[in-house]
Image: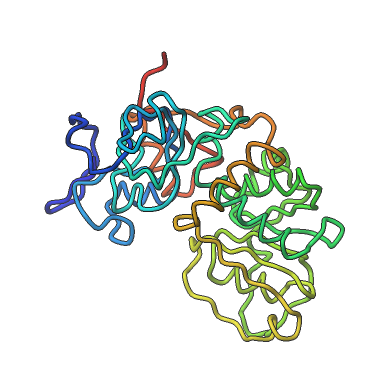
Length: 324
């Protein structure tokens, strides 16, 4: 529970399910996952958490305990990502969550609860990024696809999806010491993030990339857009490197570059279900559960510190319930 008085504190507490926020569906949480937004929420970041006390966790997977509307019988495996979960509404870092029925997605056949959160919000976002590139008509033979923030959840899962679909993937990272792991995730080439370092004065850069998944924003996103091939596409979903974008209109009006913004939290429900069905079917990744680290709620503070310090690699699953 995150509380704020003179300072912000985050500690493990025990409360009754009756004290959970209002909602139609009570879910026993099997897993949540740790995302950068969750780490900020654990610090009480005002851009993420507006009301205290608060429970972070922007996604979860588990089984229905009660459903007032009756659409999800008790025992139904389900997942929740996005909406206000873990921000204005108490989230998945708890044994139970209560949420509106409109947020609940039935677990698709082909995914276990563990696999669902091995993907989680990061995998859901990665799938939208890759979908934007494929819908733009960029085929694998078009050329290399750059992925920034490659060691993070969205970056690493985007690489795995792109590699599965046959794309030539280039990982761009500040953690080149993780090159071997990045290649296991599908990168054919690993480049330092300095490859996107640029003074921003040139309206266009040499046309290098057929497409890109950008998880960091700021100057790297500007460099990617200016270095796109004709009719290239950049799917943008993050701002770890900055929330401002400085460039001219030239990439858009001379090269026809597409900037596709990816918003996971408010993705329409029907599209949300389609994406999860795809991740459970034709886009199902091999050995999903093998690439994650599971932690308990008591281990969460250490994992949060590692993420905020830029030391996190891959996916971390939060397991509120003890192993059965």
